[in-house]
Length: 103
Image (cartoon, rainbow, N blue to C red; front, top):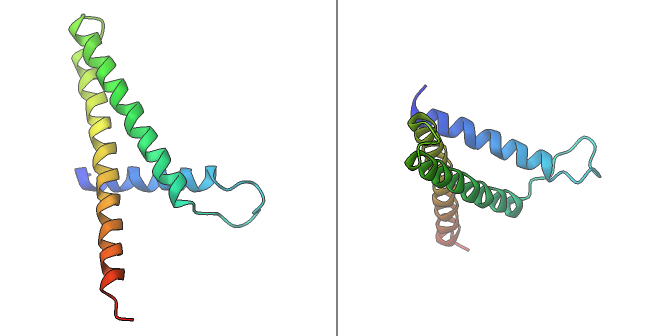
């Protein structure tokens, strides 16, 4: 599986989890999509993944963590950041398309 495909699968999974988590329970059969909640969760995920990667790097420097774990943590943080940047780019493109629409 290519790197872009893995990113797409991870982004889709995160979006589905966000939709399920934000479905306040009042809608039994329907799902509620809250874009703001999804963005907040993505930012939180970036912060968490980045902090984990930094902790792994420090642990590697002190000899407590294997290099493979450090590379894995850094890769996870990078994939999360690239996914959020890709979503941001699509939102900006959509906004620009809306601005170009004739009234």
